[in-house]
Length: 298
Image (cartoon, rainbow, N blue to C red; front, side, top):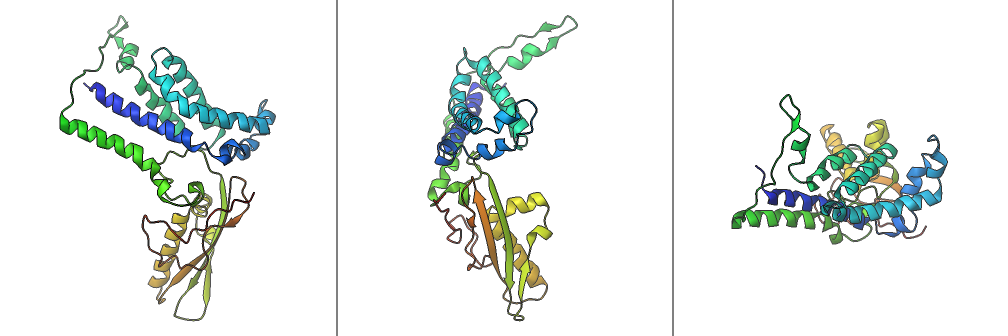
């Protein structure tokens, strides 16, 4: 039988997920400009009955503030026995609405299932029929007990990772939604709408020619969309090109990116320093100076 502290650990992890998702929304793009929801909801104008309202500016602000409030408070309401059923119903409706309106994948369904952890551990058995009579099976609470020092230390270390990993973006200067260093596994959910384009210049010592590579012609539309706005993927593609040209017999291959992007309604600007050879730039967790900072002009 699963110990009660195991449920507590998983509940804490879910609460941290929601907290970080809500805390990340407390930024000017989300609160002042209602972005990116303002852009995304405008695409729903053709939705029957509610389309014109969804595409309106007030709807974007309502959705932005409601989303931040939901993420920041739902762990509390799920933790209180009196409000738990209502909070779960609201949460399920929220996640289904997000899934219907935005291309967020399976995240909504994962959260609907995962938040059942806030209920009493025996709740699934109440739905199981016992025998032909269809009587509900009762179940006791999860067993309690004092944790061994080693187990307590492992649980504390697990929570420490869940707490600190999403905060590693503070080690990088600039707007994390732009440069995306420390973005992954930080629960910065639905914060960014980016559009980008990129092409690569390949130079070698074999001849005086300059090769231009258009990745749009080599990738699927989704692959190109993701790669063209994420600096680490742009560098990885540059390294791929360097390997490809080296295998073709070229010497001292250098790869430069001409990359532009826009984010959340900000003006389009260069994303990557075009004078940096990305093929030879070190791959590490250190800040990448070749990512150009987001300009504050609007």
